[in-house]
Amino acid sequence: MSQRDVSDISRQIVDATGGLRMRRLRQAEWSRRLVRENQLRSSDLIWPIFVKDGDGAEPVASMPGVERRSVAGCVDAARQAADLGIPVIALFPFTDPALRDETGSQALNPDNLVCRTARAIKKAVPEIGIMCDAALDPYTSHGHDGLMDGERILNDESVEVLMRQSVIQAEAGADIIGPSDMMDGRVACIRSALDDAGLRDTMIMAYSAKYASAFYGPFRDAVGSNAMLKGDKRTYQMDFANANEALREAAQDIAEGADMIMVKPGLAYLDILSRITQELNVPAFAYQTSGEYAMIMAAAQNGWLDGDKAILEVLTAYKRAGASGILSYFAPKVAMALREAAG
Ligand SMILES: NCc1[nH]cc(CCC(=O)O)c1CC(=O)O
Ligand SMILES: [Mg+2]
Image (cartoon, rainbow, N blue to C red):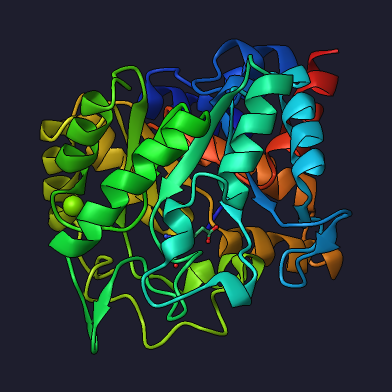
């Protein structure tokens, strides 16, 4: 084969492409910025934090860089988040095992840890949004999100407790209730319970497509439910093989009155997020779960990848898939990096 002249190749390329060279716009940072389609901002972030009783902070072993904080530590975190332009923090309590029981009765204590934290944050940092989960797993001795009868997780009986838990949390200062339990019909019931209590402005972000996933492991360490969990959550959380079902779940939650919906986990479920945002006209969020956090951190700590770059890439991918926002343990780190990049 004879070697062809470069000018022949250039002519052939122009013939084939019509002269459109896709690399032209990639040649400089300014032109890449000019045509960038998606941009992560601090206002896209929701920061999940873990609260514990007592003073001081303790590390979560499987989530390097993440701590369980005291109530005062959570107030500091809320202030930091507000300063960084993060709109919402999500509170997750570590409950003393001695306070856990079969029915998760601490969930209905208006002075439980999460309610005390919400109240303290509302008072000190009124400008930040507070989100609290509706689910019983931080409080039950079996680690499940609902009430149990033998091996079964009861649906309607659990919903009755979730309605009361939601009202209690909203009264303590939660602006957003996030039902993360995956019981059927709970969004409608929580909405009516909030309305009946005069809490018409409390928002609901439904964990609509929440899959039974291995990526929640470190979270369960953080809230102390891993050791307790009996069996798995496959009778209420979704089968990771299913996609159409997620659309039905999301559509149902919207019909029941959810203001926003969520897909969880995030990274392995970007197809679901993308379909939901394209097919249903609703603000949709993704949860970059504890397992996703742990994967990036473990690789970064080993020097196997550049953590900062990987974090930005993944979070931007969520935006590209259509997310209105992302729950991420990296939220403050990323917000700081975005602020620095903006100069
Ligand atoms: N209903 C509890 C809940 N709320 C958020 C997460 C997981 C969050 C994470 O992994 O970061 C879980 C765990 C579970 O369902 O077992
Ligand atoms: Mg549902």
